[in-house]
Image (tube, rainbow, N blue to C red):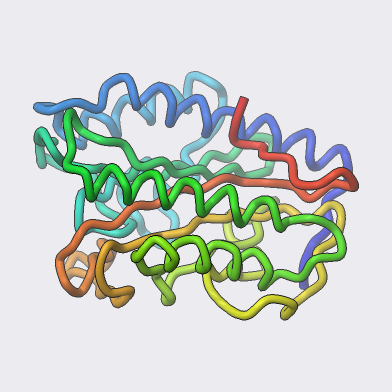
Length: 248
């Protein structure tokens, strides 16, 4: 069942989402060649706790860290550790927060120093695809209109969208109904209504859309080893269209 939020609930979500957003912006100042990913994880933890919030991912189904950090061919769920970021990497940072009983979720893919032209284009196309999807999150549209807009933009630019991982509803729980695929035909699935809160998150690969999970049980990588990017916003559907909660 899709849970429709009232104004008070959306107010609480807005606060949690702003902390997630501020965390990902803060980390962006530290993402540069030479930094270990576990340092970024510690910085995120300290920042979220300082806002009287909780890291939503830490302990979720046994996940061991505050944030997910996925580098180059890693799509999502990369675990922070001793790996050092290098010039030319791209790194996706996924952050979840919990405050006042409500969740926020955001992701951004950063360039580490100078990156090649293909990676630059991948980041541009993926972020643009996210906003193409968000534009369709209006009352009276259908859920699949979001994924169709994302897929159309991505494939028109020669990249592919991951099928086995999707966006999701969010609110009292980190993951709620409905699932929000990044692909599909338009005009299908539930009709979108005011008060729905969704985490829309295209994961875009430069090569094949196929992925697999490493032996750590978490890190998802592209099957062909080519780079992937991930952008995400938590939004609420209003009478006037989508409001992005994880942004200024």
